[in-house]
Image 1 (cartoon, rainbow, N blue to C red):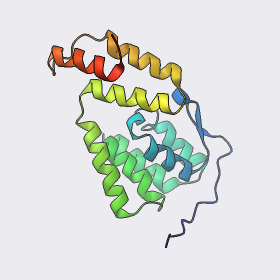
Image 2 (cartoon, rainbow, N blue to C red; image 1 turned 30 degrees about the vertical axis):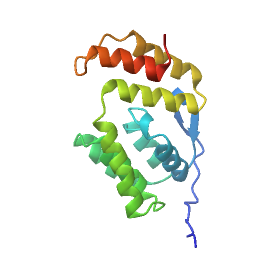
Image 3 (cartoon, rainbow, N blue to C red; image 1 turned 45 degrees about the vertical axis):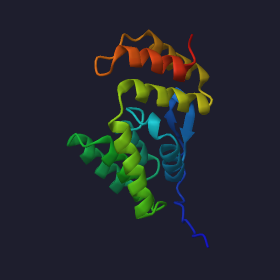
Length: 164
């Protein structure tokens, strides 16, 4: 049998906007759903003081906003910031949060070119075609990554980006 998820009643009058993909978020549940389905897109557009202000002002989640501000002040990790948001919603089980944290840790350990590709793939999948193309083009224009073999990078670009 499934379980019931009790949602917060508060809906923002002013949405939190993630400009790069033209997404507007109105509730904590929408924010959690976005995060979990776009882990490769987590960056400064989510992990910032503006999100803390929005959570406090629009959703009246003062305790969560203050916890996130503390993480930012202490230069905490992106993973810690994200897991704090997800845990506060009471939507996810401990096992699900652990799985999400594992994915975030794997992302943290990926090569920059791999991160860029996953980000572009996710942008493309969510309909942000122009942003995805810009990232794919930046991957192709980049000089060889010193942390990986140049021949491997060219092979990777041909195989995964379908370039001649």
